[in-house]
Length: 205
Image (cartoon, rainbow, N blue to C red):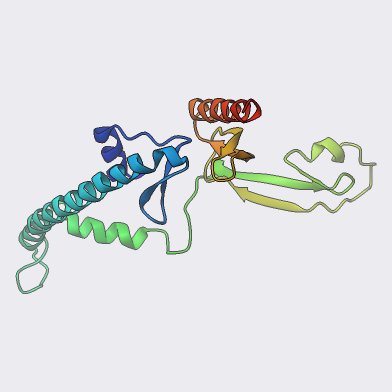
């Protein structure tokens, strides 16, 4: 979640759960339960107003920072004519110059930078046709003098976390839907209880 939406939800007590969620593509809240539609419309009105105010404040702040940085850059690193100013040879470069250095060292577009500890090694056990992270599980049985070809892959783990799965209620079809993942156990338990209650309610109509 980006900092803008986090601030909005915390300041307006908006807590997406099984009944509504935020759609990243639409950049709007959508109702998962028909009973939440009016409330979600109110959330979206507040969100649009908040976002417009946030953008205006950010633009104003960016302009102030740019003026300060440009002034520092001209004084420390360049003359107004664009020629390097050697008047301060022992000083650290200004933030504009540091940003240029950082950009030059940045990872090229289309690539990611990962720590070595995030790389996993997997080996194919052809007997079971399973990828395993410990080849000794089957290579220990090799006879002396044997040579065995082993397929090897490296996997990059960019994120590792715990998810919680439960079956959810399909409000549109009024039936139990397939399972879904939730990032928190509390949200998963709420969705599970809601689904269970709806199923019980339907069976006792």
